[in-house]
Length: 591
Image 1 (cartoon, rainbow, N blue to C red):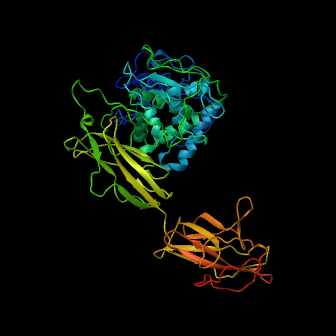
Image 2: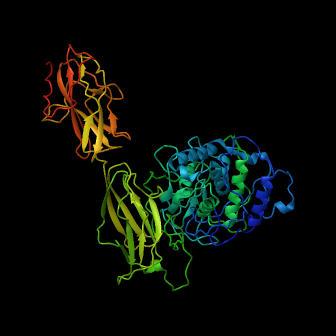
Image 3: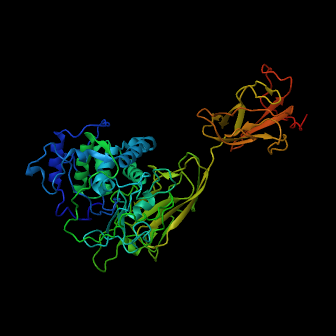
C-alpha cells in the first residue's frame, strides 16, 4: 500500500516530525543484532539536505495507502514525544523478517549488485518498502515458491480519497475492470507492473503476487535512471518515485535505519502485521480476495497484459529519465490538457523508421516522436512513452526497456540512447501518448552480429589421430576485423564434406555434445577479449583419411583446417600449414 496523491497522512499517519524523531531515537538505540551491516548508506530522515523534487508521475504504486507503524525504540515504553501520530511498534519481533521474504530481498540485492553495480541497492531498502507496503507480505503468508497464499490487493483507485486510475489491465491482475488497484507484497499498480515486472524465482513468469518477482522488480525500479542509492539525493529520489510523499520517504528511511542495525529470519507466516494505515478513517473500497483464492494469472516476463485506456499523466519535470505511468491532476472542467489536443505522433526527422546497429554498440540515431494536432501543429508538454518489444536484449541507457519523456517546446520527445545488446535480430520500438488513444509511431530496429573479416589458426602443428582415438591438440583460431582483434564474435565450426561442399560430413572426426554423442557442427562459439576461440576436443571414428574442419564468422571470416586420421598417426607430427587454399576433399568411409 502507498500514500494518497496530493494528500498528507491523516488519522494514524506518521508525520515528518514523528519520523525524524523516531530515527533520531533509533540512532541511539540498539536493535536486535544478527546480520552484518552493509556499506554505509545515508538514510537519516530530517537531514538538512533538501528533499529533491520528484513529479507525481514517478511512483510505482499509484500513491495508494500504506502502513504507518514506526519501528520500535530501545525503551519498552517510549515517551509521548516520540509517538506523534501512529504509535510506535514495540518488541524485538519487529526485527524479524519471514524467511522466504528475507531471502527474496537478499537475492534481489545480489542480482542488482551484478547487473547494476553502480546502483548500490541495499536489501534493507527493499525490506523497508515491503514492511510499509504490505507488512512483509502479511507477516510472510507465502508459499515455498514465494507466491502469497492469497493476493494482496489495495483499495481501488477510484478518486474517492485516493488517486483516480481507471482500469489498465482488464482486471487481469487486480480482478477489477473498472479501476486499478495496487497489487502484491510491493504494491505495484498494474500499469507499472506491465513494464517493470520481473521473474525473480526463475519460473518463467512475472507475478506481482510472488515476493521474489516483486522484490526484483522493485529493485530494478529503484535502480533506474542511473541512480546511485549510496548518495542521499538519489536515495530520496528513488523512494519518492515509489510513492510521492515526504511522510512516506521519512517512514521508509526509519525502517531502513532500523533493519541496518540488525535483523533475523523468522518462520514464514509468523511475522506480525502492522496495525495502522495511512487511510484509517477513510472508507475502504478494496476488493481483496480471501485466503485460498487463486492469484490472478501472471504474465510472461516482457509480455505484460495489454493495457486498456491507461490514465492521463502530467508532464515530468525531468524528461530525460524513464518514469512510470500515473494519473495527472484533473484540470478545470472544459480545459483540455496538452495531451487532449494530440491527434497523432510522427517521427521528428526524415530518416524513416528503420535503424541498424552492430551488437554491443549504441544506435547512432536517436529515436523520437513529435506530437501534433489534427491541423499539424506541434504540442509541448505531452508525455510520450517509448517501449522496446520483441526478442531482444537491447535497452535504453540505464538498462530499461521503457522510457517516458515529455515533449519539448517544439513538440518533440527524444528517447534515451538505444543500446544494442548481444542478441542479433529485429525488434520494435513504439511511441505512444501516455493515457490517450492518439495514433503512435513505431520504429523497426535491427541488431547485426559482431563481424570478423579474417580467421587464422594460432598454431601450425599438424592435427593427426589414430582411428577411434582423440586428437592430441585443440583447434584454436584468432579473429580480427580490419586488422584489430575481434572480441565477442560468434563462430561456427563444421566438419565439412569437401572444400566445395560446406555441408556437414557424415563420417570422420567429430566433436561431442553434452551427452557424449558425436556432432559435426558447433554453433554458439564466441571469441574472447583477444579475438581467440578454442574449439572443444576432436575425436576420430574408425575410418582413416584426410578431413576438413571449417570455422566461419559473420563478416566473412573463414579458415579451413586439415585433419588426418591414420593408423600411423603420431602426436609428434611435424608442422603443417594451418589452412589450405585448396584443401583435399573429405575421405570416403573406409579410406
